[in-house]
Length: 107
Image (tube, rainbow, N blue to C red; front, side, top):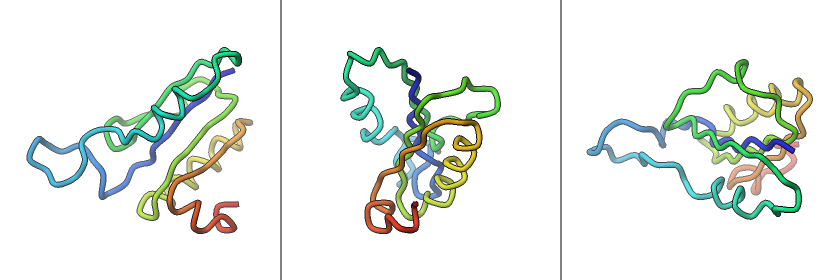
């Protein structure tokens, strides 16, 4: 089983320099979820943080599960990614503050 964890790009969260007011490191949500994935599933996982690294998703492998976390300022990008990976046949799960507060919108 291959799992992809994505933190979508967010204008409030980006890598600039050591002197920026924005965060310049991956939030811990996705690495925690990866670490909590039971070993019995033998999952291979990848974590992509669009605020730190660019990714050409057309060149990445196909994933069985794609997990996306989103806050309000990144949810539009999160929905774009969810639609893209659904069309590729991945099972998509979303979480984060925005999705928790507006689950009907996320569905």
